[in-house]
Amino acid sequence: MHQKDVDNLQRVYTEKGLVQHPELIKSIQRTLKAVPVELPKQKLQDKLLEYMVLPLFGELDVYMHAVEHGTISEEQGNKLKLLERLYQSLSKEKPYQQIMATDLEDTRKKIIRFDPHTNSPSDLKYILIQNGVCYADKRRLDDIVNTFYVDALLGGSVIITLEGKDKCSRDYATDLKRKDRRDKSIISVGKFFICVNKDQNPIIAIDHYGYGNYHSKSLGEWQENGKIDTFAFGPSAVLYLAERLGISRIAYCDLEMAEFAKQCGLGRKQVFKPMDAVNGPKFDDRKAGIISVGDNSKGIWHHKHSIYHQTNGRYFTLDYEPVTIKDLLMQFEVLRSEIELGMKNIGSGHLTISNHSKLRIKERFTAMYTILRIMEETHLVHPYFNQAKQNYNFTINSVTTRNPSFSLPYVK
Image 1 (cartoon, one colour):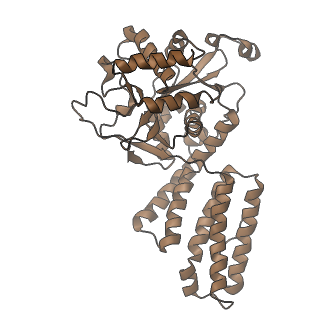
Image 2 (image 1 turned 180 degrees about the vertical axis):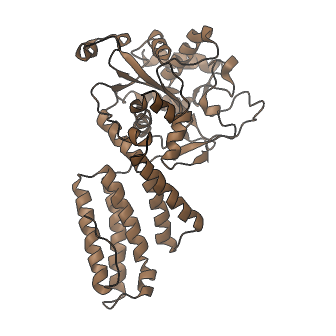
Image 3 (image 1 turned 45 degrees about the horizontal axis):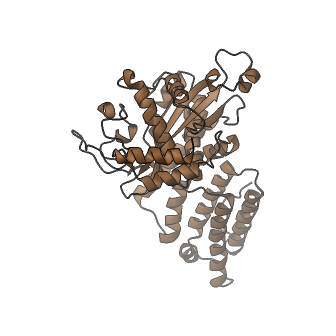
């Protein structure tokens, strides 16, 4: 569909009072054009690693507080213990370990962004039916599909599908060559909404991510039904899309996504304005694009969205800022140089307990070590990681030379 046709469509829906935040969705329309239809697998794998280290970043925030203030509260100490338990469970306990170990570069699967400019409403209907989307009134399915389709055109929704081997095909190579998407198996579907938070800043809300025609309510059910190896594609895709769209906040509204976010150490935040738990507003301004209301069973969507599940407007939320190895190394080197400069400023004599406390040497080493742990998970083979380890050990030597009683283990 040409942009002129999309503009006309937006004008028609706007005149009917059905479109919100027109400038935001215009921007999303333009940005989405540069997002590939097939999301790059290596990028998705990198995003999965970012989830793995979210608890460590939480720990780093606490340690940096200690560097600045010299101490942490009992509440912060308890938070450190919780975050470490969450981090360990991500790497050792099912089903979380299975999610983190998912091979997102599996050649038998791919994540596709539904492009309404090159696909028809009937293509979208096929996707939704294959996913077994549960709606209150299936007789209104065509209306639901058309609403989703128009909203995707306007930039209010982003729909992704995890596609894989045709269930009826014995030859995957042949399956890949088929041009008709209906010959391919839709493994899972994700529906992400472009929204604005209570402060009118753009966010991505994960309204739904599910597989097949089964509606699970927990990650344990994904595991029990042998589908846990497909879950990781969803949260990884939303991080990639957030980065490409320039949106820095993600709300995990879907039940299993909320469970996953909690396991990664994220907390609930006041994302949207509270609703009246009984009546709810006729509509509010949280969703960009085609308007949505608290109870859509009789509205234009004919389906209650997850962005209204919490009447208090609080959801597990990630304030997302992609962190590079250079960012980590810079923070690491600042901490290390502060130790070296502090020792230089107090002269060449013995480092006393008072010196240690004043320079907060232990606190800085703890923060540096946490950065190394993050690097190890995300950039194990990067030369910057080896450089940082060497610098860490060198600084331990600098301190122990002036205070032999100072003891910290070297890193290998």
